Length: 158
Image (cartoon, helix red, strand yellow):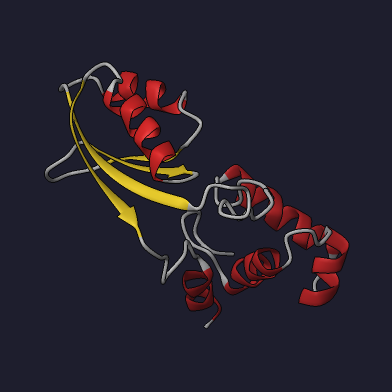
């Protein structure tokens, strides 16, 4: 069994299986991994408790949903107001992620829009958030490496 902060090969194999086929049940996972159902359930419970396994949401294509434009904005905000700004950004549906960062800006925001005109409306809403003092926005032209965890899991299996 790995230390609390590490994954062992079985954890990694289980997570790879669920990454590829998130709708698999515990019994099918146990069959494919060649371990007892109780072992799989215990591993999943432990991974959930640790926050490694956070759920099984569907993998949605935002472009297919009509949000074909992705942009990133670096926000400079009033010092000490990160929590308040993040809460206000959370209220903007097109804001998909917000990361506190080091460097030039304070927050990195990933947002989506239907087109350029819609992006302008989204940016206007972000800029008008209280305590946002400056923004710099870039439009994503493509996503050559999408969000992924597979390579990290494969390292644990080796």
